[in-house]
Image 1 (tube, rainbow, N blue to C red):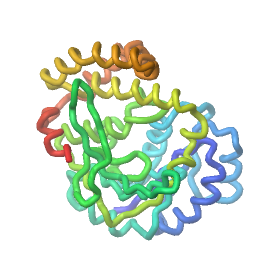
Image 2: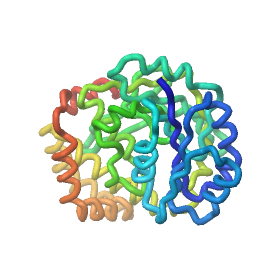
Image 3: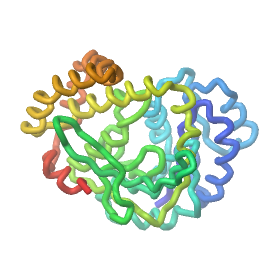
Image 4: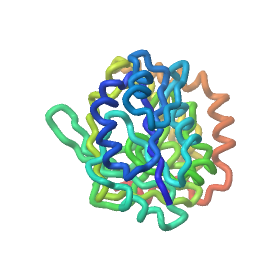
Length: 303
C-alpha cells in the first residue's frame, strides 16, 4: 500500500516555499499533489519552477476547500490519501507508521496530533468529540490520549480512497470552508466505518498563518461557520428527538442572538435557509444504508 499527499493551496506561495521541502523529506517518496484554488500570488509559477516533479492541478477560479480537495483526491494514484494544509508540516517520516493503522479494511481515516501554534501557546489538537445540546450539534477538542475520534481533520489526516469515493468525498455545499471534514467523518461513522486517532503521528500547524485568517474578516468567518453548522444539522441529523429539539430551540437561539447583537448567527441561519432545497437533496443522497443512529454514534464520542 502506498500514499498520496494532497495539498490544497490558495495564495500560499510563502507557506509552500517554507514548508513543502519539509513535507517532501517526510513523505518517503510518496506522490505529492498540489491543487491550486485560483491563486493570484504566483503560487503555480513558483511550483513549476522549483518543484517540477510535484503534480500540480490548477483551478481557474477560487471556489473553496471541498472542491479543491475533491479534485486532488480524484487525481491521487494510491490507496491512502494524506491531506495537508499549506501551513502544516509533519515532524517525522510518518508514512510507515501511518500505513500500519490501515491494516483493517474498515478503517476509513486516521487523524494526527496537531501541534497548533495559537499566539504564544501550542495547543494539542487533532482528536474531536461532539454532542447534541439544546438543539445544536456542538463539537470540541478531545483528549489526545484516546484513540478514537469523531472526525479526521481535513488539514492533517489520512483517508482510504476507496471509502472516500464510496461516500462521495467532501460535500461541496460547505465551500468555502469549515465543517466539511466533520460531515464526511460523521457520514462514514454512521455507515459503520472506523476512524482512528494516532498519537504517534505529529504535525506542526501554524494555525494563524493559513489563508482563511488572512483573506476573511472575523465576522465573515463566523457567519460561514454558523451557516455550515446549520447545514450539517439539517443534512445529517435523522433522530426524531434531536430534530424536535432543534426545532424547539432555534427560535430561542435566534432571539438570543438578536438581543446580544450576534448578527453572524442570524445571517448564517438565513444563508443556510436559502440553500434548504439543496441541503435536502444531499440529505436524501447521503443518508442511505446507515447502520448507526445519531444517539448511538454520539454516545461513543462525547468525551
